[in-house]
Image (cartoon, rainbow, N blue to C red; front, side):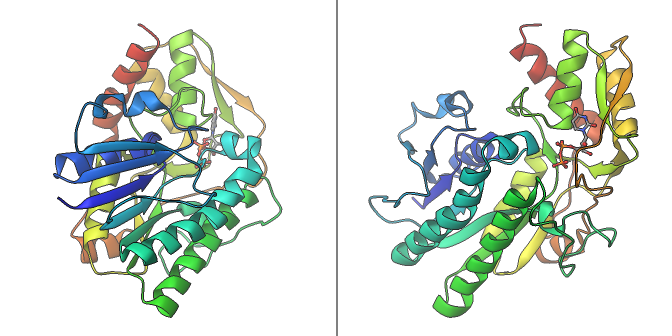
Length: 312
Ligand code: UDP
């Protein structure tokens, strides 16, 4: 049985990755310090002999007994509200944490995949964003702690690849949604759905003309799985190119939830990217991957999850 370590394994993406690797027949070791992760996301796996959980902070020396074939480094706060609250931990997990994980991968002769982000492109001046675009990031702005940690993460991962010959994979993840997102993580989707369910107005930041492209979680996980098993060591965008303004997104949530509330405008946060859409040519060509779940279908599933969470 192949053995995989998933850091951030109790988080939104990490827990869905645990599910996928369990389903594929791997022995899965999830590691998380539960700062933003939630044990409830992986509770259903504890009864399985092929699953283990380590409550550990990857910025401290990481020890895992026995062999490892693969490591997926997904530990990090990832929503603007979280990394504004814990900027130092965010910088540490992307830098020191990644260094520990790369050292562990070397010691175990394991292949490592690191979770990077569309935030490496910052507030992009190129549209859509292809992997060869270097980005437009403000290092000292509110998003700097996340964006620069992830940029450092990519750099040190490439250095381990070129200098030590480590097998590395880098996924640049665009906005992703689905069950197990936290209702209070401040992201636009849980914010809007939570507001609709509580009978509050939907808070649109700025005039709502900024765009995002939302990918359903199972599509993302499939892209990551394919990238890990590919032989491509450089960054690959994984996301859904279907782009929408935040105002249109608000309209879709109002329709989906049937709420009678309206949209109200709040100030646009500093350095909020104006537009974002992945160019997924590489993922199509190298991984034979593209998203399958439409926003309509993905939002319906996610809405049911949040309704259950709020006991409605
Ligand atoms: N946003 C919004 N209302 C909210 C939360 C977010 O209008 O209650 C906007 C936010 O300004 C951004 C977009 O929605 O332009 C996506 O924000 P999110 O935090 O989900 O992700 P990110 O900015 O990291 O893509």
